[in-house]
Length: 246
Ligand SMILES: [Zn+2]
Image (cartoon, rainbow, N blue to C red; front, side, top):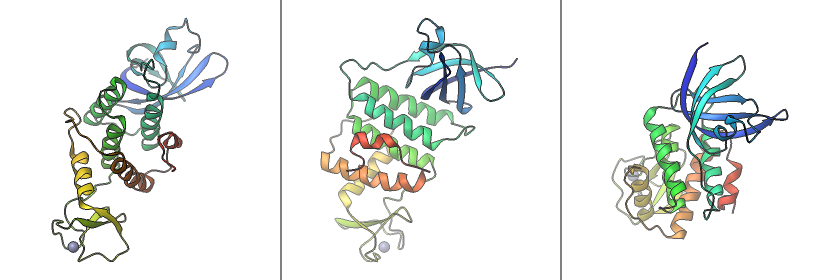
């Protein structure tokens, strides 16, 4: 019997029979796995605490025919919802995006997993604007999904953008200057392009104090939604809790 040690996030859960649960865990090394946790619905069972939605856990697993099974484990971090009620909406979106983005067996590299842990801890700690964190996360995720957004050079002439109002072509995922614009692109202020470029390159371990106005934040959210929609098989339902379908 081969034991597999993993560290991962409980993305999703489903009741199975009366006392069991199936959970989907996004792991650092083996990607997304489904685990059948017997008796995990019983509060006195040790698996109860290891299978809580949105927690970060360390597990020792055994691979079965259709599922993995828990041999042992410990809780690394769960979410404190007290005095932090709206966190559920942000975490639902964060984890649903991850669930949609990765299939069983997709490898999650160590660096990307570190970014996810950092974002999770920042969201939970309530120290930085959660909308800002999610916008940064969306840029990191888009990059992971192969969407390399060009914010600096025009798609056609490769010149750096100087005008105050420029264009964005979602097909090429690139900015377009005024001279090259075919007027079919999305009009966008260069100062917002600069904010987005800054956010997309930001080192998550070192987020400076930033204030982005709520109208700019909404604009960036709408911008990211178009790109997410292009790159994901479906959009997360939880986006509606964050005003995503306004
Ligand atoms: Zn151009």
